[in-house]
Each structure stands twice: as C-alpha cells, then as structure tokens.
Length: 269
Image 1 (spheres, one colour):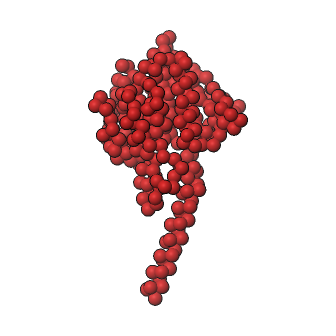
Image 2 (cartoon, rainbow, N blue to C red):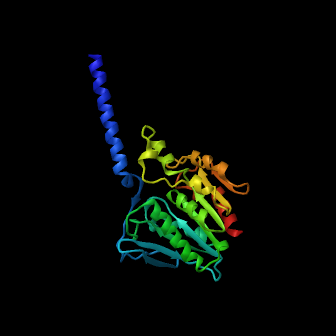
Image 3 (cartoon, rainbow, N blue to C red):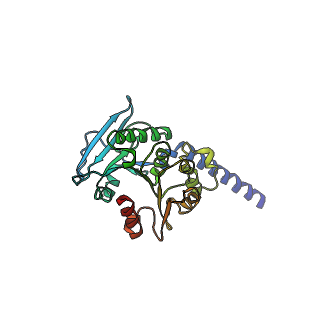
C-alpha cells in the first residue's frame, strides 16, 4: 500500500512539475512583465514641463517616450531613464524631480506593449530602442553630458547601452546579475537558464562600461535580492561604488538619505 501511495505522489508531483514548467516557458512574458497599455490619444498630465514623443519604427512598432524638460534656464545634461517591468511611464514619473532639480532633462522610454509603445517585446528590441533614445540624446548633448539610469528591469538595458556608447555615468537601482538569476531565486527547481527567452546579462555588460558606475541596492529587497549586486560588485572599477541601503526594499530606496545624498552628489559633479 505504501509503495502504491508513493508511486501516486511521485507521478502527481511530476505532472505538477511539468505543467508548471510548461506554464513558465509559454507564459513567461505574462509572468515577468506587467505593462499597462494606453490609447495613443491618451494625454499625460504631468506637473513638469514635458513633451510626448512617438517614434514610428515600422508598421507594428512605435516607440513612445516622454521628454521632461529641466525647469531652470540652463540644462546641464540629459538622463536616459529605463524603468522597471510594471505599468508605464506614469508610474515612474514621480522620480523625475530628483533629476530635473539638478538641471537635467530626462528622456523616459516605454518598452513595447507598455503605455503607448506598441510591438512585440524581445530582448534585442529593448537594446535597439535604448539605442534609438541615445541617438536622440546625442543629437542634442555631448556624451559627457549623458547619464544612463536603469531601475530594476531597466538596469540590464541601461548597462548594455553604456557598454556600447559613451556616457558621463551609469547608475543602476536594484540591478540583477541576469534575468535567470532572479527567476531561479523564486523557482530553483527549474532549469530556468534554458527556459527563459530573456537573459539581459548585466554582468557581461558591466565589464565593458568605461564610464563611472554607481549602484543602489537595499538589503531587504524582496524582488531582486541584494545578493545580485554583491555578485556584480567584483566587476566594478576601483572608482565605482555599490551603495548599500540597509533595510531598503525594492521600491522605497528614495525614502533613504543614503540614496538621496549620493544621487545629489553624482548629479552635482
């Protein structure tokens, strides 16, 4: 009887495991990304001066970004802001004043399927769209006036861009070592490195970045564990810095003095 029960539980567990694996493989975009789409006629109501820009890529793809202007008479440079995997630009616009108050213009992009951007999301497309935004920035500013900023999902995109284009500084908020490292933290029983369509290997790109790098990460991050930044730390140059926010989680780092002071410092340089 015990052998029969063990067999039954084994086959039940195996079926559940296989169904879960199939769900991860075929539904991974829905699991990893949580966009909120907007109608193309939607009007952003941000308090900051801004321009809503749409760049047609082809018949299916349209890149949408918002250009937030610096309120002062002099613009010191531009921040290319690559946001996380949730919602759209509206969700991240609350961070804009931390940059514009230092005289920086901010270009914030929405990924394919996010906000008013259209098209199918792929890793290659994320890199290509980031390059499009860089080309827009470099047409107005010198490379030493461009800061590349990535938050969460956007850190791999930002690191890749900084590895192939010059900039003043790369700033990464809650970065991952790579996508499989994050997913395997939650699903250690699956060979996620073979199953995911996305890699975004921040560790590979960080080795190639010539600009100064600043990383912010909280020790209580429950989304992208802090150990991801600790794995990236050996790849940093001597003048680069990992700013550890004790007790900080994934979305509250701007409530901590350590981040605000360091961000003000690097933006004032």
